[in-house]
Every structure is written in C-alpha cells, then in structure tokens.
Amino acid sequence: MEPNSVTQASTSRVLSVCTAAPLPVEVVKMKSKVKWMAEQLIIRMEDFQFPSSLTPTDDLDGASSIVTVLEGYNSLISDTFDGVSQVKSEISSLTGYVDQWRRGHCSEQRPKPSVPGPLQNLLSRKEFVHTVTIEALMRVKELLNLLLKNLDHLESC
Image (tube, rainbow, N blue to C red):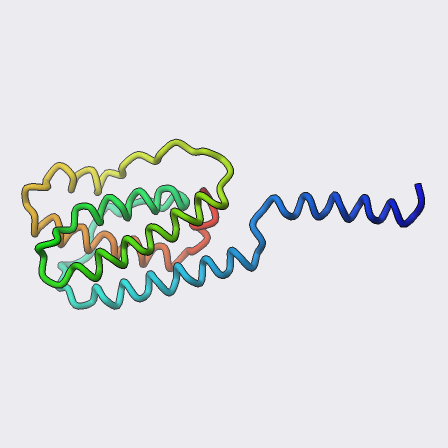
C-alpha cells in the first residue's frame, strides 16, 4: 500500500467514526437555544405569584424525560388561568425543539420514560384546576432552573 493510500484510508475511517455523533457545533447551538428559551420562559413566569419551593423535584434523565415532564405539566396548565396562554405556547415551543433534537440525534430507542411522582400526583388531582395550574407552573419553572444549571442533560437521550 502506498503511503498516500494509507493516509486516505485512515482519514476515511476517522471521518466515518466522527460523523456518527452530532458535531460539537450542533450541540453548542442546541444548548444555546434551549438556554435562551428556558430563560425567556422563566422571565415570563415571574408575573405569577408562587408559594415557596416544592419538594420533591422531578429528575432530569435526558431529553426524553425532559419532553415527557414538560408535556405533562403543560397539559395540566388550565387555559382559563389568567395570562397563561403565552407561557403554554412557549413551553410547547421548547418541548417541540427538544423533542425534534432528540429524534434527530438519538439513535437508540429508549422506552417512553415513566411519569415522575410529582407529575403523577398532580394528574390525580385535576379537578382542582387553579391549584393544579399553579403547581404545574411552579414545577415547570423549577425544572427549567435545574436544566439551566446543567444543560448536559440535553445530550443524553
């Protein structure tokens, strides 16, 4: 084998291995956009009066669980609650963006994550519309703050 063909073969192998994972630039752009969207949502949610912090919190276990939790809480936020329509729309946009990223970059098919305890608890109390809406908004805000502290959760599926 000629030296040139060895170099080409090695380069070809390196390129094929490198293209299997998302490019770092894509990851940086995705994290930057999610960060911006989450920060905007938190600012918008400052208009709502919330009691002190909640326990327990939802676990962030990759993009799939983030999508599941955000979709779940968004479905519990009542459309009749004053001033919430823009927040719901932005939660949907953020969820859609993370879900689109996950579908395009996660080759492994993980089972749909189970609904976490705090969300499950709220689902069982849907008849208390305004109370559930306030708690769902609080939990979304808490989840976004957790996400902003560690955007690396987005990289796992």
